[in-house]
Length: 217
Ligand code: CTP
Image (tube, rainbow, N blue to C red):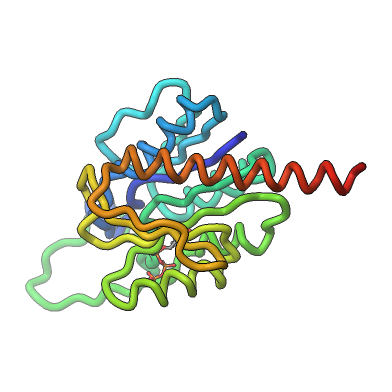
């Protein structure tokens, strides 16, 4: 299987020095890439800025902003079977980039933000035969919001997690598909969670291929 996995945060630069971002470490996406690669999948890892070393054998593409991530993902989408969006993509970017450095003025300044493209939603619109997995980072009404994302972004699975996952080696997740809860994993290592997700994806992919073969016959 050919899988594209995104990981880490994005940086949205305000000026040459400062940026908007979040606390994503990239550990979940890198763990997924490592496990998929070990299982023999062809992996493209598209990563925002992190301090992690990419797993050996994956095609590694580093990006900075949400827009760059979108361009890279869109370019590789036709050549892959599945996409796992584990990246914590920024939803906003400064409306204006200040060349140089904004100097201290001693008074309040206003930062205008524009929405970034929802990469996963765009992929869902052109789903075709792709398998799509998204992550939902929620602070309240987790199940409801995760299911909303599953439907609105046209996903096969959504992985609900919480801010405590950020930067940690472990996470508590609930994985949903359109039939409901598939699995809850409490305080489990991101490697183990990755094994489960990659197995799920492999089985899903196999069932799609079986159906296609039956149709062709
Ligand atoms: N995502 C994306 N593009 C964005 C924002 C998010 O592709 N601009 C993807 C994430 O990688 C994740 C899923 O969408 O797989 C859900 O991301 P999340 O941050 O939980 O939710 P949002 O869709 O951004 O909505 P909100 O922040 O309002 O909860």
